[in-house]
Length: 508
Image (cartoon, rainbow, N blue to C red):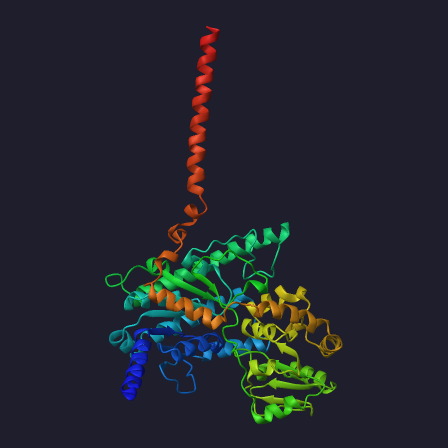
């Protein structure tokens, strides 16, 4: 009898878990692995919870995981790799406007190739899903997939909010108090900063219009009007927006109910053991460890030789050990206190007690991990948001900035001596780290709750902001002000006419 009850309970548990299991599609057709690295812990956690997760990207997970269906569709990496190498070598500008057109074309073409790949076409033909997670990288035309599968659309973005994403949910901009992503500001702005911020917001708006124009072309090519809603309709039908922000990082904004901050999503609750050779090197750093990495796009091997030599000469005179992510088998004149590896587990290294300093490109993922583990940074930003990320937190007292063009041996040595010779940088970041960690739920648990919420409530349209349907004139009440002006003008004229008529009668 007891055996029968046990079997019944096991079957009941399995049944209940399947009953609450959802089928989720996530598309990340990006040539930049860092965007997917931000999302993968969440997607793995969804699979571990019992949901059937299908992830389409150019990058395999690298291991087998139950309920996690990895669909690898390659895209062209050559243009992006060449562009990143050119920026690392100082041959082209890292200005966002200078690379916008090439980046947008690369991303949109990659998304288009993925959507039309036979493997993905088979998914569109044979599969059904309860939710679609869009790995957004200026490619919102893929939101048409939510219309194709008849499911809620969820946008997951590895950077801070942009105008293009604000637009899909109707999030008010508030340029008078909320610094633009492209600006160097955070917190309270003075008058002239507010003027500059308004102009930058206007510029970002123009960029958003340009990107929307490009996306519309790709959308209409992949989702013809006779079968699908219009591009504008699918853009305004996003159920949930998950963004890589947290108010403790200095940008406080009045978010809508369907905009959820999940900064730190990629940081696991527990660190993993370091590989033996790396662990021996890190544990032996009794005077401290300096970790050097420029992310997944900018590669140390592509730095000009004179810049590499500057780094090596500066490191050679230190008592600290240096662990450097260097994507080549060897490097000339390597000091005895420096260890290079093609790949390094960044989060686990930053979490180690011996890590005292991080030399970074200042990508958002690296910045957030350093903040979480309270490790001061020497920022060497190369392009895009790396430059603004560094500038925004310069006054917080835990980073120093050296632009690639200003990287000299004397400059780097003096910065290293200044940061390693005092505790003030570590003390400053520790305060901010405590603020960042103090959350009611982990970013992953928060994201999972709201994803399941949106699915349970079939898109959660009750959380949708009515302002998303309004155009610029309507959302700023320009039509209302115009109407009131006309009414006031007519009333004034009628009063004037009445007074004039009354005066004439009195005189007569």
